[in-house]
Length: 135
Image (cartoon, rainbow, N blue to C red; front, side, top):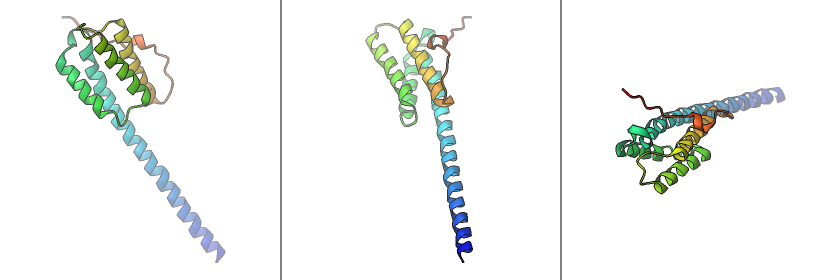
C-alpha cells in the first residue's frame, strides 16, 4: 500500500514540477518575444531624434511604442529613455541631438541588449550610431 502511495505521489509531484517549469519557460519565451518586438520598434523610431530623420511624426511613433513597452522593459531601459526625454526637453530649441543626446541613445540600446541577452555587454554606448546615408 505504501509503495502505491509513493508511486502516485511521485507521479503527481513530477507532473506538477514539469507543468510549473514548462509554463514558466513559455512565459519567459513570450516575454522575450514581446520585448524584442518593442525594442526593435523603439530603435527604429529613435532615429526621429537625430539627423535628417528628425521629425515630429517619427517622434510620435517613438512615444507610442515607448508607452507600449512600459510593462516589459527593464528599469535600466526605462531610466535611459527618461534621460533622453529630459535631455530633449532641456535642449528643445535644437532640431538635432547634440553629442550628449546621442550618447544617451546609445545607453538606451545598450540597456536593451543587456535586458534581452541577460548578460553584460562591453560595447561602449557611443558606438551605437544612427548612420545617415547621403545620396
